[in-house]
Amino acid sequence: MKLTRKMVLSRAKASELHSVRKLNCWGSHLTDISICREMPSLEVITLSVNSISTLEPVSRCRQLSELYLRKNCISSLAELFYLKGLPCLRVLWLAENPCCGACPHLYRMTVLRNLPRLQKLDNRAVTEEEVSRALVEGEEVTAPSRQHSGNGPPELSYTLSAEDAAAEMPRDPLSLGEETSSIQGQLGLKRPSRDQFPSFSQRAATSSRKNRGLCSAGWTRD
Image (cartoon, rainbow, N blue to C red):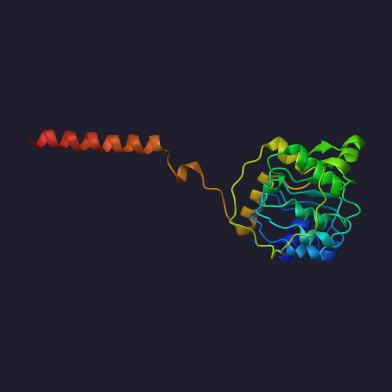
């Protein structure tokens, strides 16, 4: 799914893209966030639990200070190249993406070597010692070899604990429950009552009574 102007303005409660400072798109089935190129004032964006495959669109968000991207489809740490030009970036959550690989230490050292100004990575504070070690133990990234259109692979289904969701969205974004209620309200949907859909046990009891009635009638006729 593509992040559209209408979606951005609705969620950010803004009238123009250039005025959007905070945006929550947690768990929105997004594959294309190219519209972020039109949001130069963006400071905090939550994109966790989507299917995003490239970070190029946020390279234009020069005011960005917090970027939450957990559980997406970022396949290569080369995508960090697009974040190196963001002077205000201090918080990054990139864990549980394919690019993290099998070695957590190498992953962390590589991220910190390329983004030494980070103060928190994957919900863990960055120390001066780590930044110094990253210069030796991390790997320098270069621009990705191919450009992405912003359309990632098929959407994936994830679950996220309430504690993790709260940690990823500290800046007063909508909770998943609130998002769901908001969507239902926009579509004019009402949650069905339990009376509309009897439980399995109720249906079974009704069926059983009907069967007993038929059997009794049959024995009477004989």
